[in-house]
Image (tube, rainbow, N blue to C red; front, side, top):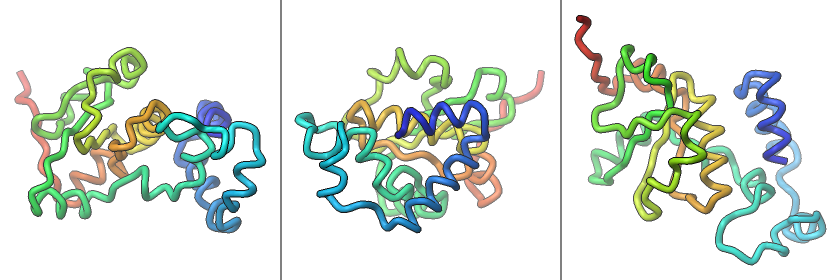
Length: 169
């Protein structure tokens, strides 16, 4: 299901696919464990600790995303967060979150092993679409400590998040 959604996101903006998925989940109230177990690749056939694509789909999206206000609250409470900037290098001139690891989306599939398994990680891009795709990709590989910054760097800035803008030469 996740792979289908990711394929659809090539044709349609990922936020459209995300909203359709969110509407579907809200209307269906997610199937029972018995229904999920009856689907090939469902919850009962999993032997590893990594969630299946089906398990990721049936979790509310708020488990995959974190709101900027909630993130700032957690940071004020002393929670340490590793930021990962998924944007291309040319996009960094518009600003970035201080201390973020730059890992462009095109490199994620080969570099995700650099991410710590036991630290809170927040991935972001400009609008949140690529970050949500990356979060699903990482959850499928067992990194369930990853959240997408809802609304991306744009929303982070609008809601008062600090951004470092490189000096123009």
